[in-house]
Amino acid sequence: MKNTKEPKNTPFELDGVSVKPGTRAKVELPLAQLYTQTPLNVPIHVIHGRKPGPVLMVSAAIHGDELNGVEIIRRLLRHSALKSLSGTLLAVPVVNVFGFIHKTRYLPDRRDLNRCFPGSETGSLGARMAWQFKSQVLDRATHAVDLHTGAVHRANLPQIRADLSNEGTAAMANAFGVPVVINSVLGEGTLREVAEAQGIPVITYEAGEALRFDESCIRAGVKGVLNILQHLGMTGARRAKMPSEPYIARSSSWVRAERDGVFLPLVALGAWIKKDDLIGRISSPFGGDDVNIHSPAAGILVGRNNMPLVNEGEALYHIARFEEVSEVAQSLEVFTNDIEEGPTLSGEPPIV
Image 1: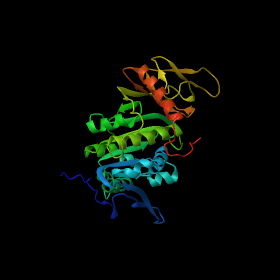
Image 2: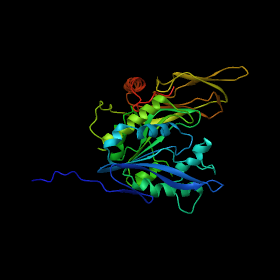
Image 3: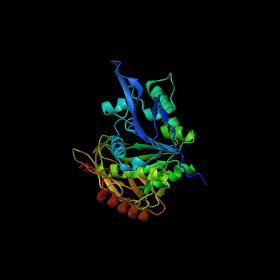
Image 4: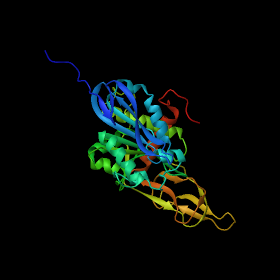
């Protein structure tokens, strides 16, 4: 007779903590201290399945003011799909605890933690934090999803950014389930660059604005991570319909202010715009002629500046270009309706 016994998992070790199969634990990873020598720990939620499988790391708030990902992970940790997990989920709601406390993107020395990887044990504060996080958490993962938003006063349409030259990364980008995927270069010093260099497929989910919760972006993020878990074989068979094939942007570019003044946007995120369409105006608060802003190319609006007061050269709109723009616009409309009308996926009331 054949041996029909299912393979059993072994304990998962993280920073000296052993997590048994079929259990979960919260590991407090010490990354830094305040001036008072009060420790600042980064909680790592370890959900360790009974059966072996991939190790997926899901991280948020590597920029401390990008909050949608924090709520995405909070809801994810309560989801029933994790009860029958194969493999291991490493969920990190807040990577940059310094920035999170002070409601800022940066570390106390004004460094961007997502430009400090792989870091070093003897470098700057950012380098030391990056080194510790990489060596203790990222290096344990086989796959990764990094959750982001736009910067302060800038909103992003839900989108995936990934290096699609990596087959495993491209498959994750397709599986996440948002219509727009931007083939993005790997920025120097980023978590994505280091992960890909180590053979860890990683995608970045960009959605919403810093220091703000956006319910539709949160719902799409929770659903997307659940899609990734299913794609990797870490959860049971999918009950919902398969996500549609995403559209990959050929390129993207920012439209910048031609002068200082008061910016009035005339198009919404996700809008399909044609070349030379009127998309905004800049006026003087004291009167005078307006400057019309026209689109330099056809595409989908995937990012927008929400601040009315702008300086010359400031980024106003981020336009992604596609081969079939009208098809992307239709897919976005269906996706938006599904997300806004569907359940929160956590059994909790939506954020309003």
